[in-house]
Length: 426
Image (cartoon, rainbow, N blue to C red; front, side, top):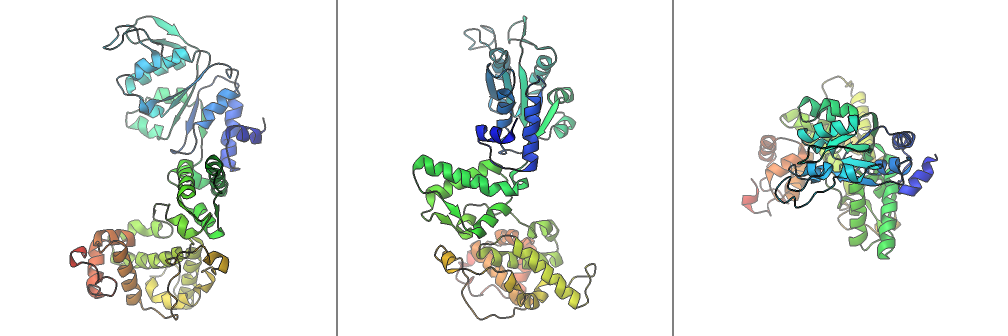
């Protein structure tokens, strides 16, 4: 079966190797009756795979029923899955078929299967082993011929260790595993998916489709997307509905992306939480990161700046494994080399650039370590309305370290912070 036709039929966009591999496994296992377990983070599109398996199986003309196990109350889950007899419990005015009975001869998709109670897991195991089940309130054994495909975003081996999931059921469900990659692992597919979502909503509401400048596309592709494809679609729909400009800059795009600690800051954030040396180092990384983000870039410049810092260290005879000089002390030398990192803003780009995107043009000046730290702390305090706790979190240092730096650098009445109410500096 041609994977391209499958993608076209089910609206799947992307050419990632891991995604193609998952689709190949789904197509190969479809003609069999083996149980399949689809794993992956929330929002990656796991629900497409049971549909593909059913559509290319011998059961395609029978029923396909999708059940969200996490959305059914624990008290009624067994009745929903296996049915009940009249009078089996309060409110059971008549007998009712369950999903396994309704789907006889077809396929049943158990989404969020890890949410099933342990008692229900026992009954599910019996269905998988023998095709037998009993309605709630009955003693009669019934039989069903159902293909089971399950999905979860939970680490089931870890749930087994914690006693929340049966090991025997896990191996029954996991006869054929399919793992769907996260969106951050499919960098080359992100822009394609965004364009598809933007085109779809433009057609639905009869509006011009949005497009991205190159720097905005780089931001899009380098964001970590914790909500995966679902989040990407949400962002595309928000921007399409809210923004009047149909060509989107990086600055506009960043307004719709929740701030997540990014490399290299995130790599060292955990070390900076309690120490002064690491805290100052991470604070200066944050200076570089913020300046670069203001002109619409997210990652490539940081790697280049780090390379230049290493070059300066090498020129000074400081090896990689030696005690590093504070990055702030190297800023004057690095600043002279940083022009290659900052992309030029063309006249075409400027048309779509807000006034906040471009820093005030001032003559280039060298910054001492103290000046760089003072400037970054003031910017963080202003962005957080003077709240030290939030500013410290943004700078990836402890609140105690921030308080000491405020005192050492005389920031209490510095320009830009003195305008804030005194009770905001806390």
